[in-house]
Length: 131
Image 1: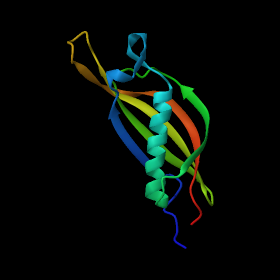
Image 2: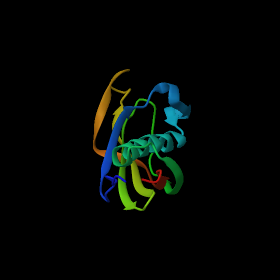
Image 3: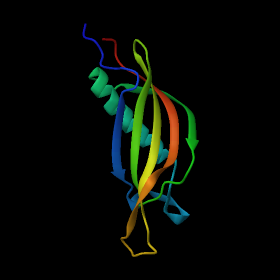
Image 4: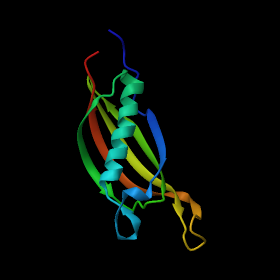
């Protein structure tokens, strides 16, 4: 039986551009499900890195939508392990907007946000197969 590489404090980070095809509301707002899907992607990588399996998402808790995510944003999605069980892995998640389009300066102009804007946070639990 092999050991897991899952340790509290381990972090996985993704970055991606939010395409305009994902705009769902006026003002090019993206729906909250976009952040949740991104959390699922980063959790999958965490499970692959720590357990050699994609794992399955079991639950979300304490989901907070704190600021808008818009089409044209560059976002950073982070998962940090906060609890490691025999088969369960609890993670804290954050979506941060690290760059945003600035149409006032031009059609394709964008600005790096310093500091980034925390848009969405959550906790989640995934399960992995027995080792």
